[in-house]
Image (cartoon, rainbow, N blue to C red; front, side, top):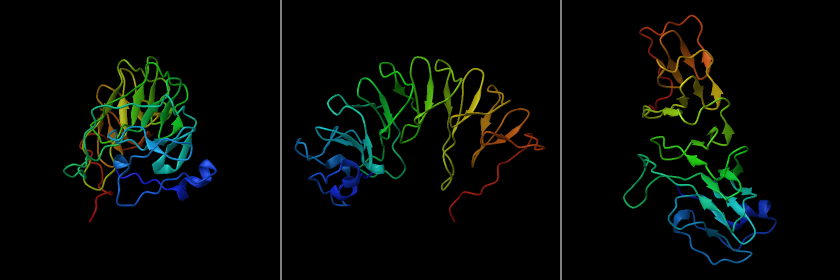
Length: 230
């Protein structure tokens, strides 16, 4: 993903425009700058992360968001992501969104409240960007805790969506099914399966997201295709 950083877009957040202007043709992973109070530098020139920093602050460049992370100890949390179909030779389309400064955990620059920095790790999900993470006692969807989720048995339910459709956001542990950070009440984690376009079903029910679809039998149910291009 090409992360674009400019003094103009960061001015309102930082209070003064950093001495860095990047062409729209240059991906952030190729930026190198000197370290000074007014200049920005990537946390790593090869980490495919959109965090940049100077001596005083950390920024999440894609959303122009300032973070309260300690720039001196910031570390990107990586993993074996799967490059997107939009990757090209020499330019893998993957993005690392989780980071820690040793005391706090961040997702796209926002603090992951309640996360234990010492044990937090992104969860591999078959995608080009991390969506879930866990620590010794909790599971998180992006920056939000999934209440009641067991990190020891937690699994992301993943399949490649049809072109033009969003990826599935279902997951489960030994006793529950979740949609993003919400509990799918009544869903059976042992028989639950994901369908396209935000649908899922178990042996007894059909769900759209976390919402039970009243009166619809899961037997023979095929999710409607409303999201494809063309």
